[in-house]
Image (cartoon, rainbow, N blue to C red):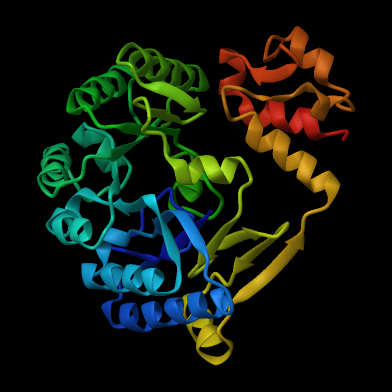
Length: 365
């Protein structure tokens, strides 16, 4: 079994922190794009009948487009692939698209990832989101009414001018909703985004690093007290409700990615598609593919991936993977990592500095 990632690049607006490959909604491109996407899928799967355990519609905002497109995509996938009897089919969605939730559920999607981000209107405004606290709560109710019994809520901490109290209030209200899963991310300022430009001008009043660390620790504590299991740095679930698609990616299991900028990992090779919408469409229309680059994973690259992906999980990695890491003892002494039963894993302080710890471990490999 493997996974299938399907990229739907359309959004209603551009969030000031986002650097993903997407297009501000252009209805006249949607049908042509979906036709190209399905042609790419048929080309990539020609000559075999793949088996999928998970399907993930990411974006962009999959809920933004007419649900008939998602229905058509899933119908095509089912015609050429075998789906697990316990298939997990996730679609990312925004609260403002709640009128689409019922037809999305009817199409076969059985897990909804809802981009709530915050439950106070000042933070939502600061993040450039189009919905309000009230509409986010209404959207959650709509998702339940549509029949979704597996819902993830995305939250972002560290928004401009956000206080720890603002964040704790968001956490408490979100936990009251009782979703099956939370994804909790610190705001990251990516290059060439609107937030990046504002920061360079000194116009982005972000919480201090210390406050952001407190916010993350508050999330870990409150979610743990509410019986959510932390199974990755940013992901928390009720028992049995972890996102199987993401786990498979972290465990380096094979997956096919189709659509604009989509990545794939198959047969020890990583590929990624063109990031320009029209270039992607035209390339697929003419050749059936839009692969821009590929990388054959060497033994060294495999080791690096195992470290960087494995450390995100509670079990960590086998100590053997770090046998040549010159900074291992320093990180152990700093209590950013710990050695337990032949495995290396991040400590709670290390979770806050995961990227730095990983960089130090792989520096001399």
